Image (tube, rainbow, N blue to C red; front, side, top):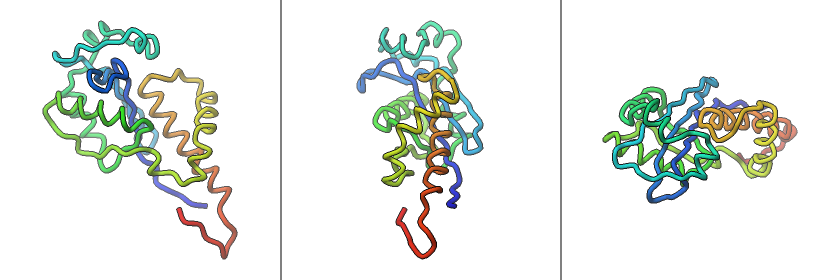
Length: 178
């Protein structure tokens, strides 16, 4: 059976899916040991984009962010304190954009590198990812489109995929490139 150290996972919720005007409104991380952290993000003064349809999906109002959100500089500092090396996400195009917007508004740089979860998976794991993810969501019973929940779902799906593929290991004398 293969054993791999579990990676850290990150997920963002955003004001919309507009890759020009949107910004992060919540970030959640799941550390390798399964510990969760999340922050609502107080909108930077220049962040004005807002989508009512996105609000219906994640359930977070702009007013909640303004009153309960953590300033961008504090969120960036927390992320840099907790994360290092490679951190994985499932929507790299969007998540990298929102990570960049967060750190740019905080006037600092991330001390970690964001990577797509696909970098962790072999072809067999990629084929089974979606079905395994749906099983994990059902088993956990957590609402999706909240950053910490989604980061935990990534973590648990990755663990499940590792177990699944461990059962598919070749017999002694055979090898498979991973």
